[in-house]
Amino acid sequence: MLFPLRSLLAAGWITLNHLVVHIDAAEVIDSQRAAGPDPSNGHWIDTWATMPQLTEPVNLPPPPFNGTGVLFSNSTIRQTLKVSVGGSQVRLKISNAFGLTNLPITAVTIAFPKNDIAGTHEIQPDTLQSVTFSGNSSVSIPTGALAVSDPLKFSVKAQSIITVTIYLKDGQLGSSFTSHPGSRVTSWWQFGNAVDAPSFSISDRRTQSAAHWYFLSSVEAWVPPSYGSFIVIGDSITDGKGSDDNKNNRWPDVLFARLQKNPLTSSISVANLAAGGNRILQDGVGPNALSRIDRDLLAHPGVKYAMVFEGVNDIGRAPSNTTGQTNVYNSLIQGYKQIVTRAHAAGIPIFAGTITPFSAPREFTQQKYSTPEREDTRNKINKWIRESGVFDAVIDFDAMIKDPAIPSRLAPEYNVGDYIHPNVKGYQKMGNGFPIEIFEKWKGGLNGFV
Image 1 (cartoon, rainbow, N blue to C red):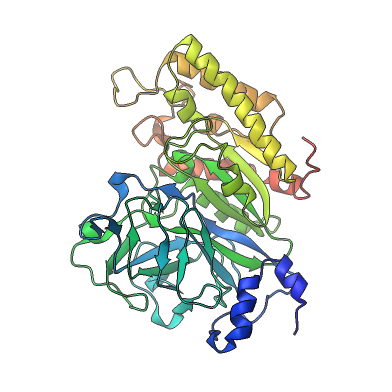
Image 2 (image 1 turned 30 degrees about the vertical axis):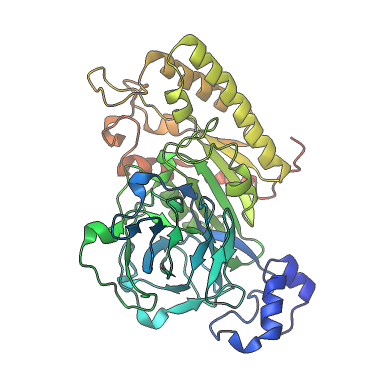
């Protein structure tokens, strides 16, 4: 079947760079590359995504993979990801958002992990495929840029685990590079080109693994036109602090499992664009939420719904006095309104989660956010979120996991121990309590006036 050139370009299936490579050097096309879009009228959406961050010094790879002036020189990194919706064709995005030098990717492969589990460095060799970028096995990604792979005929089922392996012959110069430290999934590395290796040679787990993702930005699936994604902009509570490593049991994971069981919502993917410590109003651990709306929401393909679930770190880091809390309250409301305006301008309905409790007993000194003034701000913000009508729907996480006897605290059965983050049971409560009927209500989008 032949596909019109203009429609393929418009859909993002190919680029002009693809055409140059394919016409001038057609023999380099890998037989594993997708020959054409299936379905022909489909589109790309995220089936997995994460928030790119500047890697803090504590999260850099340890020596000997962190040499003088270069990171991951002659190193292969193997990472596992849990996709949301399935598809017969996928493509990868690799980010150099925070690198100060080019990111030279030498080779990339994709496969399924052994036993279909997360966090392993073993793969199923018969599923291994090479990944190309505009027909080439290597790509040099400039500072701040993103590389998009060619479409792959690599069929994935909903909620399956995939393995992406990246080799950097020369490493990345400098000490600034892009990662996501809150992966909650073990990644592995070794020296040499091991992108095709069935398993890695691990002599020291302490220096050859970490619960971080490196360089990966998203995995897109080519899906029918009725499919779309739900992007969540959040902080550590959405990023899953307090969940289990290699279990993928954050609240968005729980929610997606529910969506898959309902025929009205099984075409919705969930993309978790959250990071621990993130704030709406100021940079902290990663850029502020207002500044990342373009990169982490509007630049993603096929978005049908969005959500913001942030504010706790803004309240907790603002001065605990009347002036400080009044200022952060007013600024947060304006910030929320700006996020809604940006989403609505793109025709995307946007939801909000109420801020969950963070007060602690007086004797628990490790929790610095807990003051009566900040609790008052949290309650005022939540009242505004619930009653203002600014958001298209409200998910009342506060009501779900608060302690009925002491509403300023998490219920004991949902507290991971720091009085801020839920435990696995708390995340299950949040994911199971999410009102999935809002997706059907807003499936037609909106007009974008306000």
